Structure formats: C-alpha cells, structure tokens
Length: 159
Image (tube, rainbow, N blue to C red; front, side, top):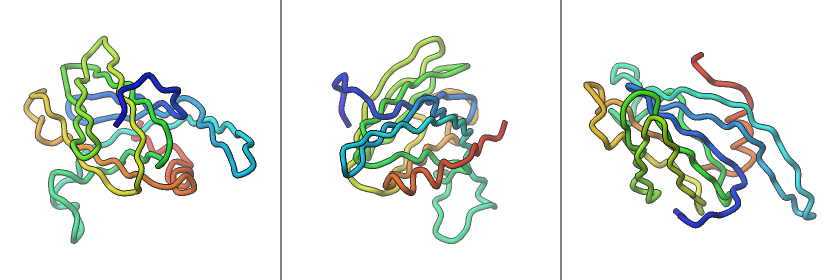
C-alpha cells in the first residue's frame, strides 16, 4: 500500500452500506502498451457486493468471507480508493493489502494501492456498524489487465 499522493491510473469509489459494500469504477483506465502508446478506456461499472449465505457456498469457499460480486483490480496499477459510507460509519479493512480506512458518511477518505502480485485478498468491515456488521466481507481479486477487462466487461450491478 502507498499513502503518497500519486497520480492514479484508476480510481474506485467504495461505499459502505448497512450491510454490504458497493464499488464504482467511474473514470477511465489509462493503459500504456509495449510501444508507449497510451489508450484510455472509460469504465462505467457499479457493483453491489453482498456476502454469500453459507447455504450457497461451494466446496472450498470461505464462510463469512465469500461475496457475490468481488472487487477486481489490475496488478501493477496505481489505484486510488475513495472510501465513504451512506448511512453509518463503516471501516474498509483488508489486512493483507495494508488497508484499513474508515468509511464515514459525508466524507471521502483516500487510500492508494499498487498490488504487485495477482491473488485473492479478503477483508471485513471493522467498525461496529449495526446488527449485521459481521456479515459484510470484502473480497478483492487482483488480476492482470486482460482478466481485469474480461471480469469488468459488463455492469454486474444488482440495481
């Protein structure tokens, strides 16, 4: 994780709700190819991410940590997270990525990240936000750019 004011290649807005997370990719992703040519791909994706019920898990999935819509992020990319909430104070915590940022209504807290290896990273809300506080996990999947575009190629929102 980085806390320097870098120039992000992608910004993701993270919103805590009672009791789930939503992710918005609202800007463009700038990608420089082998020849140094930069292409800008507009991203317009909103996803709500709810915990999967224990009865919906398949073998090998983690109880209380799996979600229906994980957050996909590209590796080797400077990412800015704008973190907020729409109801009460939540906390966006992913220990293995070194992130724990309060999600506060009416405020945007910022975290910077550059993931150097692909993988799956789990976290949870770490602020007592209400009766279902223990049931709003975070699942981040860091992938190469091609997989990032494949996994975000359409709007997976519940809305």
